[in-house]
Image 1 (tube, helix red, strand yellow):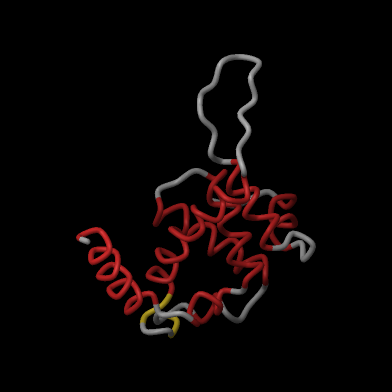
Image 2 (cartoon, rainbow, N blue to C red):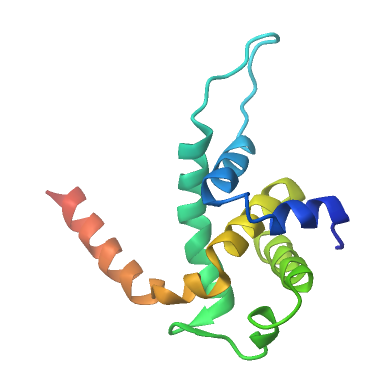
Length: 139
């Protein structure tokens, strides 16, 4: 799927930092309310929760043991527009989600840098965290 130029410019805009994209991601969470009543959500907090979930999934999608998976070097070196388009497409396909959610996720990956995801190995930390969560619940 090709994004319009305006959306790609928004994703690649350096002024749109992590906090901007967390708010945009949080805005994708809307619940049904009565007409005329606007819900009061903390969009940044909701975005952070969604990002924490998605970050682990993106790591699994793009990395293995802290290194980019084979054939993903084009996502590290190349034209920023092509990189953003490839990341967006991968998110749309892997998460089976809408463009409204995939755009802020792509913006977060671009603003943090794709290699940022490879710095922390979620493969080991997930097992440790899961075990500690189980211990806490059993007490």
